[in-house]
Amino acid sequence: MVTDEEQVEDLKKWWQRNGRHVTTGAVIGLAAVLGLRAWWDYQERQRLSASTEYEQFQAEFSQGNTDAVLRRGNYLIENYSGTPYAVIAALTLAKVHVDRGELPAAKQQLQWVVDKAKAPELVHIARLRLARVIAAEGDPAAAIKVLESVDAGTFAASYDELKGDLYVAAGDRDQARAAYRKAIAELNSGAGSDLVQMKLDDLGAEG
Image 1 (cartoon, rainbow, N blue to C red):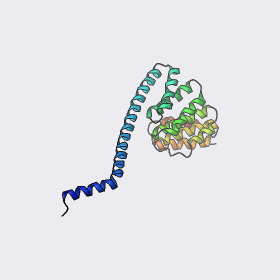
Image 2: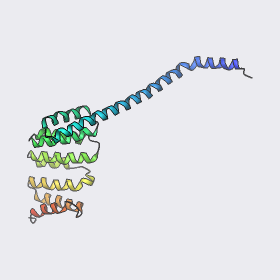
Image 3: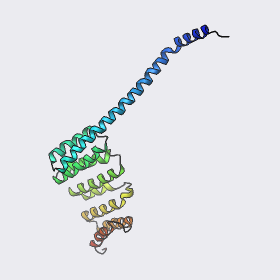
Image 4: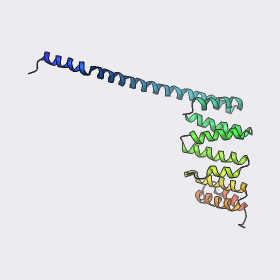
């Protein structure tokens, strides 16, 4: 029968053999927990800070203070790129640049959204606007390429309607008709189908 003294002695020996590893594991585990908690705290601070910056950004935009909007919008993008606030800021900055006739700057913002946004809906919106900006620069063929080989999902009608517009601008009326017809079929008599039908009718009979 093992006595209490022998059990204590066995524990001492075990601790001598394994104590360092146990202590190291405990320290590592504690550090991991503390590190995770610090990361969560950091993420929360970032979220709150980004939210505050975005509120100011919205106020400046509402006031029409475009210089302030550009400064704060770029600050949001540079410092909070992983948040939805940065994506919305980039879309807003693109609009400001278009209004100011700064199409290359607008393209840069929209491409950033296409590359960085996590929400598919925002990616589609940015890509459609990017194609329009490229077309406004006088290159409808390049704009069409932006829309090709894309799984448009629920944005399919919007893609095809814009393709129709771009084909018209490029002088390819047959391709425009085909794109408009696809858009009308995808809309299935829903909102916007009448407008697309008008665009199709304006092209006249096929030659």
